Image (cartoon, rainbow, N blue to C red):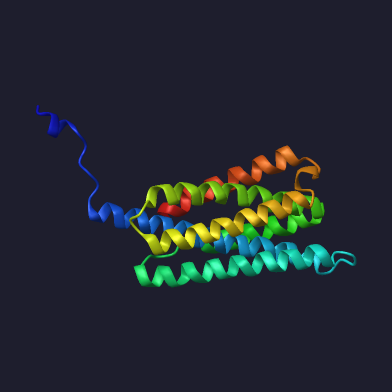
Length: 188
């Protein structure tokens, strides 16, 4: 067996296109889920007297996520990428997570944001490393979105995310859910 035949074949164009489609699909689903989390949190905080500050912060963060989702909507059409089949599930789960963490209090809502955004920060960093120079426009968009997600995370931490009741458990559960959703959305 020659040295050449013992190496795995280099990925072909179809593999690269499929991998890019997975990235776009999961990023779109993630941004959709994020908008739903913020909608759920705002549904609670917008009804509470004295919660104007957090409601305004959530509205700003939700607006950023809506811009991200719209960009991935356009990219999905341009690249002919189908959305995840689990969109309705992610929408309901995101909204529910938002409502539950808001009902737990402002710090729990911030803990939710910090946990989600930390996973997304890592996820986008990995995608940027994988993309390299192959898709400069998509990479620039992902880098910009990653920076905004980091700002959301930093704001949540500054607002007391790590002081939430049961923070380690809450953070671990939310991060595990996000990572599972990423893995599933790539294929389904």
